[in-house]
Image 1 (cartoon, one colour):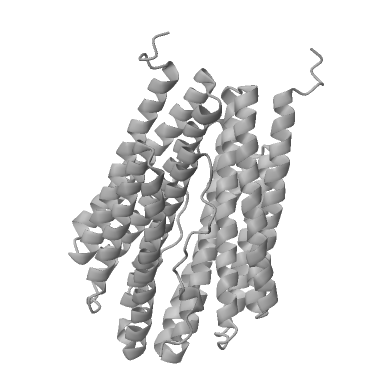
Image 2 (tube, rainbow over the protein chains, first blue to last red; image 1 turned 90 degrees about the horizontal axis):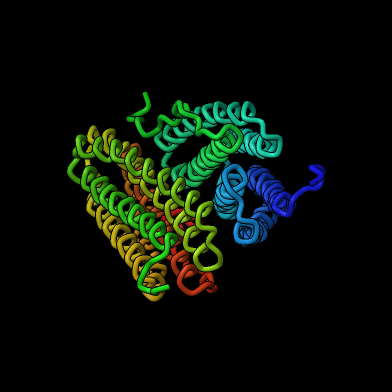
Length: 235
Length: 235
């Protein structure tokens, strides 16, 4: 058989891959819009993010259905089967990242009523951009089968964790200085935690890509930078 | 063929089901131990939860491998394929629930240094028991193919969300009354949020079971009781 003719399986996988890249692009956009809606106190933009999440969820359902159909019709084995199962896991992670972006947008509508807290909006926006870039690179690493790029994303999660630690300590300080800051700080802190979790999920996806490309999960434990579980009182 | 002889596929699925029930039992135990370690300020028990999470993660990897092998060797289609894909999704949710229990245990080791905050330990323990019971029922509903029990679990997530709302407001009040409470309240609030997320994940699992048993995802939106995104200042 002419090896330039792709198999039915190859065409199916290409269709599913197109869907995951489409889903990934929408999630990247949701992350940036959620952060922008917060910084600009833009309630309409926040509402767009919330509506957009339905489209993201619908694509995940479509990916699940097409993956099941591909498995049933083409009976892929070994690497081909692993590719389909990988896409399912990536789609599930993307859906959760999209949910976190939506949760940030929900809180923006409440925060508009409150005074900004000392530069934290800008810090949150930086964290969000960092995570969006990690996601973009993870999706690229998947398309290109680039395990080195995926490993680089894994390492960058530490920077996101450090940004989160710094914000956490800042919030504790603001709250102690002035109890009127407490409610706003609680909401902002939620948002920071959501962005940090998006970073973790993106790192999970990068590990899936490494597994897909090399056949092995990365073994050394990923560097975990979130030390806030150990915070006692800030000095 | 004698229909009392189970197929090779049936035996494989039974093996994977046994693994998921084992994993589920360990996660239920982790939830209860994490909450107990907090209430009793028991650092050794918290450490057991953290160690136990490695076993939970290892079983998920095993389930993934056996599911891939079953798909490759038995080429299941339609309902049989859906069963295998369902197990993969349940295992991924269980692994995340286990992680949240571990995160609660991590914070217990820090909280032992701080004064208890007004009955919140007991409230957290009640929430954790509620979620553990939801998980137990979800796993039962899966084994028994009982979509009604799974639907009941979905509805109960609202109670967990309400317990969370009440705790969130209490924490805001305590922090405003006395800034020395702030650090302890932040940690306790994290734990409450983790338990609330465990409830959400358990509800996702219940929805998967409904899909598995009936062939359709439940359509009316699950009742979402977490209103904390809309909290302004407590009156």
